[in-house]
Length: 467
Image (cartoon, rainbow, N blue to C red; front, side, top):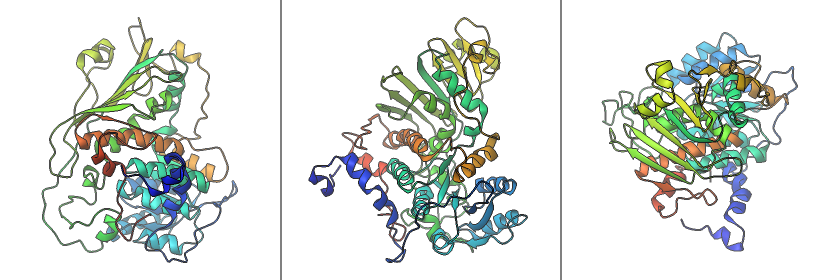
């Protein structure tokens, strides 16, 4: 990795990145040179409604709109690059927010909406960081869908910007609001399962390739240039090859099965075991459906070194229909009690027992799993993590909204979200390289693999660049 000339003054890379993080996020090409970003983050009182913009109005964002219809906040603006999808979202929102203004370009939204307090970002992965960083530069609180970013470098920039601007943040791991997730974290931290040595997580998600690979005419109402955003220019290809859904399987736009589900499925293990810095990541990958896509199947083995309060352990990820070893599942008692293994699940193995899913515990010598609320060893563990007022997505949004009004805090703020996203995306780096990598977290690099630099740090297209 070429060393920055700014490091020649004798400061460390960590110091340099810390000092320049704010600058790296607020100089946005396409804005007027004299543009002045917002001051301190806005704080509303407990009884006041936030003025919120929703960037992305269809697909996953449809559920976001439905949730905000139930919350006592004010959606004042909607934005989507596809006018058809924007109209659909506006119609859904109109029962409570008929006057919400509509935009096709998020940059124009931020320029014109002077009374915004917060923004929800529900877009393809490659635009999470550009939109969120610009919003935070304006002093807006941000809720961003998972994974937090497409690259590791962006995840760290999101974390740094949130800290420096003092905004309230939350990543869209909606299951984080569930009592079962928080209780499972408490149980593992309390040592009920003993020292954890293995984590297995599997997911049936696999890439899909639409038929067309031609250069088709852009549909009426779709701003393809803004959809591409920071990504390199490429022709539009019809039959849903990229838009609106299959973008997630392309490395320039999405983060594959790991990015799609990793932040959900690793949530308990990451939080309970502090899995922020793997020492190395090994992979087994299949072929791809097309150049530039993630493989059909992958097995990713993260190795974490011993650290204070935790022994060395491995976390193995399986996707595309791959499953853990059947004998291991039988040895843990999973097959006997639960029968056919579900397509997506998790198993955390300690030297005293195992956790299956979010809430089933079986200690050594026991015949059956019991729910963590019923298991005697679990009952003795005190609650140490605050519970959300509501479960599910409304509870997750609700915690963010309350925190914007200085009521409580978020459970998936960008500090932890960035670290978790980084861990997940390192698996993608190894998958794209197709071989084992060693990770130097201090210097944000894969030693001996200069080709990894482009996978860790994006190159943004002019006009959307955050430089």
